[in-house]
Length: 164
Image 1 (cartoon, rainbow, N blue to C red):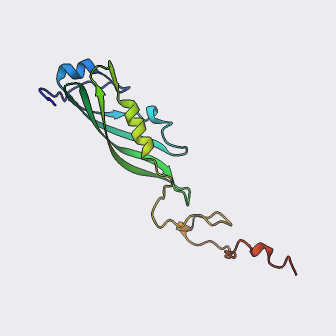
Image 2 (cartoon, rainbow, N blue to C red; image 1 turned 30 degrees about the vertical axis):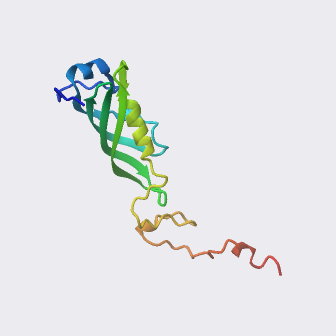
Image 3 (cartoon, one colour; image 1 turned 60 degrees about the horizontal axis):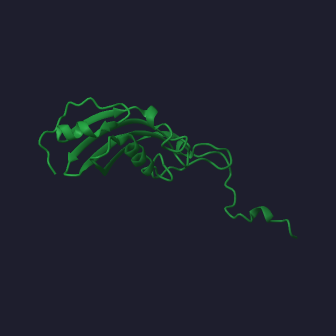
């Protein structure tokens, strides 16, 4: 890989589509950008959403390829699976990809969206010991106990007394 000159002051395109010719001419590129959440609205399953994304990119030029190293960090708003409270959760992810230097455009937005989609967890919790909601009255048990009497944990309890 060659890195004859790496530019730090580069006007990053808002759609993150970089011209390969520019990167080759500069001999590589290091840049950073704030990605607008409007480009990422449909990446996570509803009701989760990405609220802030910072991106650092490093393009390294080799003989026939361009190596892209990216780092994403930011915030996403998620809903707790137990109590349904919405909380902000930080994230930080890296990605690496190689592209042929014969391409006209290198689309980094695709990599950003793909990386963020792969980081989505199956189930978010506001805190590891979240107590959730009361199944009877719906009160948030993190705020204190409710006045409901505990029901039997057996799924067959409703059959009690039906077969006498």
